[in-house]
Length: 156
Image (cartoon, rainbow, N blue to C red; front, side, top):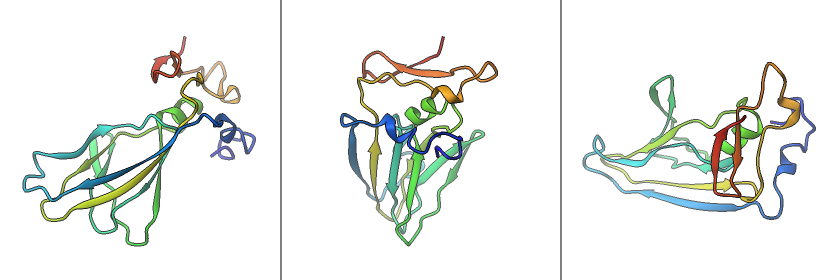
């Protein structure tokens, strides 16, 4: 990602220190007789910088929002890892990489199992856009502030 942005190779990695949280979440969605009425996980964007997702190999359920329409992510049988950009990375890249809205829908006949690993930055660290990505034409868009309480505001 740093190379795509023409940054030093370790520029993004250096934002993560020993206080950066990493945690896992296992998701289980049992069969649901009325999937039209029940979401597995409501629409959201992840706050951590990156999420690595091991999806269910048999059941479609993850959807991304694009231009007002929800699109299915196909189930994959070879244990592919899906990398999601989080809001923290969106802040660091000044909106060049965006944290998409996603949700999980239920299935009437099959259970769905997945595992997500979340990689964040030190919650006490103020996060802003990397200086190299700022210019008069592209000023700072967002900043994380308020001592780790995860509040995001429009940059001044």
